[in-house]
Structure formats: structure tokens, C-alpha cells
Image 1 (tube, rainbow, N blue to C red):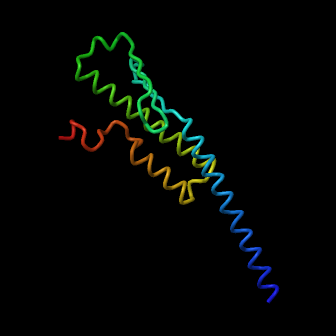
Image 2 (image 1 turned 90 degrees about the horizontal axis):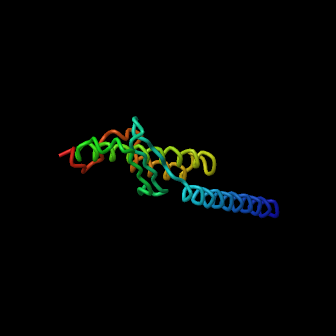
Length: 134
């Protein structure tokens, strides 16, 4: 009976340490993701975009060449560059997941899938609901 109690206590201690370790890695992942940004340039470098950790646009810079574009083309190029910056963010998040909690954990899969669904790597395709997809 004593051996069973000792084995149960060892299992409980091991389980508690595992949970504590997972929580610490998840907190570290959260801290790292919060500090991330994504970045993209239009191929001709006339537009650059930086997005924050939740994908929000934080900075847009235009080269003087954009003045030669009509409004519709400027809008298309800007939106394409924003999507690429968000896809860059998604890739950076995946790297942080790999380095902290691991992509094979439930937490890792949830975080990676969340960003991949919101900001797909194929950033050229309009998202559902975009006006081009009428």
C-alpha cells in the first residue's frame, strides 16, 4: 500500500511539474507574440507595410511613385502588401510557437491555426467578403 501511495505521489508531482512547465512556456509564447510585427514591401518597393501582433496596420510608407497610380490600383497594391505583412506575421508566430510550446502541442496547434486562418500564406487571394470576390 505504501508503494502505491509513493507511486501516486510521484505521478502527481511529475504531472504538476509538467503542467507548470507548460504554463510557463505558454506565458513565454504570449509575451513573444505580443512583441512581434510583420513586414512586407510591394515588389517595386513603392509601398511598405508593418503590422502589429494582432495583424493591425501600424505603419504604411509610400514612395513618390505611387502618385502615378490610379486610386483602384493603389488600393489593390496596398491591400496586397498588407496581406503579405500579415502572412509574414503568421510565419513569425509559427516560429515562436516552435521555439516555445512546440507545434505538436494543443496550444501550439491552436495558436498556429488561428494565425494561419486569419492571415494565410497565400496573401494574394482576397479574403472572404472582399469586394473583388462579389
